[in-house]
Length: 279
Image (cartoon, rainbow, N blue to C red; front, side, top):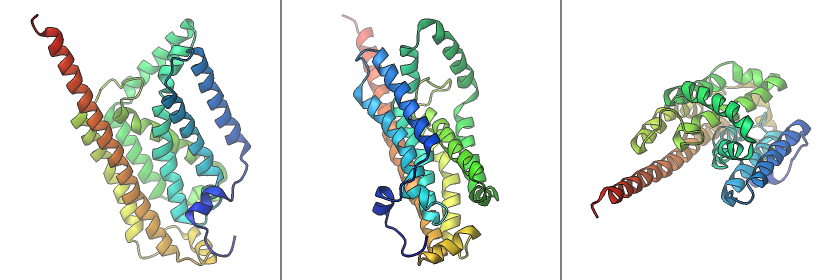
C-alpha cells in the first residue's frame, strides 16, 4: 500500500478483510453463549450478554478491520491492536461471566468435570502467577526477536494473537474477581497492589519505544516511508499508546474495581452487624 496513511476512523470502517476461521470461531462462541442464556430461561442479565458479545466483536475489529490490514505497516496501529487483544477484549469477555453461565446451563452430570477443572486452575493461577505471566508475555513479545519473527511468519503471528487474548483473560481474572473466584481472593487494597505490579512491564515497553531515537523494528521502516510517515515518529506514538493509553486504561478499570470491592465489603460488614445486633 502506498499513499497517505489512513486516519483512525478510516481504519475502523474500511479496509475490512474476510478471515473465515476467525469468523467461524466468533460465531460459534456467540451461538454457544446464547444457547447457555436460553438454557437459563430469561434469568440472565442482559448486560452480561452484551458484554460478552462485545468482547467477541473486538476480535474481528482488531484483526479484520484496518487495524489488521495495517498492523504490519504502522507500529502505532499494531500497538492499538495489541491493546484491544490484551486488555479490552478479555475484560469484556469476563464481564459476560461465561463460566457461571456454563455451570448453570450444563446438565448436572457434566458440571462435576467442569468444577474439577476449575479447581485445578484456581490452585495454579494465583495472583502472583497471573501478573507474572502477563508481564513476561508483554516483555518477551515486544523486546525480543520474537516480535520481528511474528511479522515474517503468519502462523506465529496468529498464535501470538491467541496468546494475547488468553493472557489477558488470566491477567483480569484476579482483579475482576471473575468466576470462578480465584483461590486467593484480593481485597480492595490487594487489587491496587496487583495493578501496580502489572504496570512496570507495560511502562518499560512503552517508554522504550517512545524514547528510542532509531527504528527498533526494521520491518516498519519502509512501509511507514511509503505512507509518508516517519517510522521513528510512528514508533514513538506506538510507545505512547502502550505507556500512557494502556496504563491509563488499566488504572481506570483497577480503581473502579477496587472501589467496587471496598463498597461491597462495607455492605457485607453492615449486613453482618445488622444480623448480630440485639433485638
